[in-house]
Length: 244
Image (tube, helix red, strand yellow):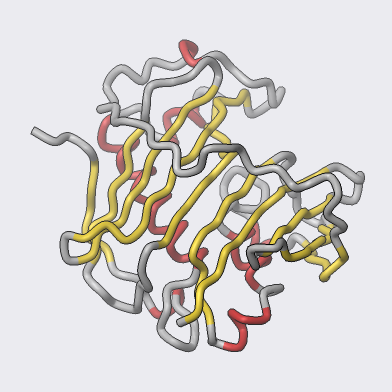
């Protein structure tokens, strides 16, 4: 019996662009909500962790979109945790449409003490009730911005109330909207996101202004880095696009 958690879903109006194509942020929210529900069903839930002063923080995400996902199409969304690797908790996601896999994502999370921000060892929480699936690497190498690539400031973003989640900092799915706002082809309605890679380094807090640095590589992928007021790197990301 396949115990991997899955649920039916549809992309709503608020998660689509003017072409009725699913936004990157909407896809991320659908997958991560499935992950939250898997935790709530199999225990410990995310709320259980918070009650113990702990949280799972996303550090890396790789995502591939194989076909265009449109508004209100019937979907099945999957999410499964994987066996821990030292202090890293991997998790996989997938979305099927009409029995065909159209989206895959692999993520890595860190278990963190919410007060001290110290990374905790995997055995400090009992996750034995979770059904563990296999972890799939979508890319051979980790995301790294080439040292010789010059990034140019594309804009700034003020972290406000609407950006925050119940961890008290900018929600990781909202970065997708911030970055996609700086991809002209998406605004023009001629392209959609085909791939997304992101490395989260430092949380963004209420009132901070992030500097958004951008360039384009030889394959046409957009490369981003956002910088905190302290000068620290907030995130590094790569977004691939394809014509509609």
